[in-house]
Length: 161
Image (tube, rainbow, N blue to C red; front, top):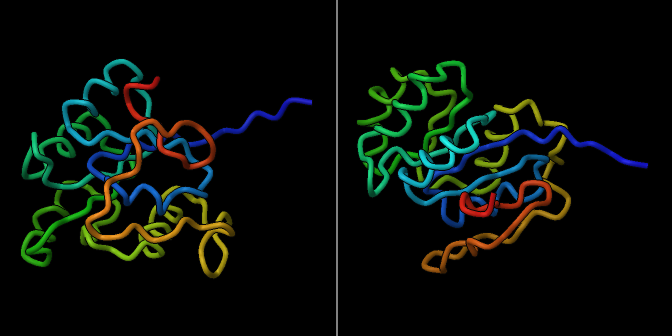
């Protein structure tokens, strides 16, 4: 017997260890740490179902990557993570058609819930999060290894595909 799972492809840019919070969601999470890698992955693969990105990336600041992707795909569900000063920048970011805006230091449970709701996956969550939710990412610890591959919600580095 063969089961085909229609996992949503979510491009995560600049998430670092935050991607761990999405580990049990039934998604295919493709992670890049730079805008250049995200653009390269999009050019070679083309299709994504959602975008999660830091607003300010080292190689594209002030939401340039998000603006470019949203101009080509205005319907794309998008979560933006904002660094401080959060409140001062939130109004400007909302004008780009973003689905949700969160502070970059968002709690893992809230982050997971917002992404699940954006993708219509609320039933994938329990009251306390996924059944085997990953442990919290410790501040200062290195990001998730770039070699993680496949499985529900596990990060797939852009270069692996």
